[in-house]
Amino acid sequence: MKTSFNKLLITMAVTAATSGAMVNAAEPGRINFEGAVTDTPCGISADSLNQNVNLGQIGLENLNAGGQSERQEFEIELVNCQISNEDGAQNKVSITFNGRTAQGKTDELLTRGDAGDVVVKMFTDSEEPVEMDTAIESNFGAGEDSWMNTLHFYAIAAKSDGGTVTEGDFNTEATFTLTYQ
Image (tube, rainbow, N blue to C red; front, side):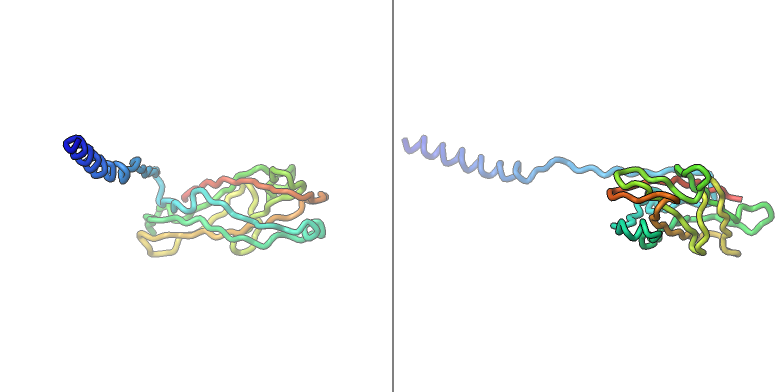
């Protein structure tokens, strides 16, 4: 009996010693790295590629009275730009936004969701309306060989012309394309 008890104690000690190591073992983690190489003078910051601009909760009566949401700023950061001042060098960039608009209202993005008659309008930092499918030109600074350029914009939510806003969530999206000259 004493021998069986000793064997039991040894078995329990070995099990306890090895089970602690097993408890600490976890599933391996994973990190994915993504990117793209493009034949352009600049890269686009990872934070600028896919953005969410939250326009917040907006009062129904405010929109129906012709009001708008608070303006929400966003930017597109161009990084590691290789710019030259030589003749023929690409030292300007144009950005063109694309999105779903109403007939004849190229500066109003139509929204989806439960809220009705809400549009999203985008503006440049100089408060000019952004029209979809229309290029906006920007110059790079002179004399710089490698730096970054940031394009600034803001967005608001408003009532569509002639509409009556109804309560609910809404969303929309715009894509952008950069062209270098």
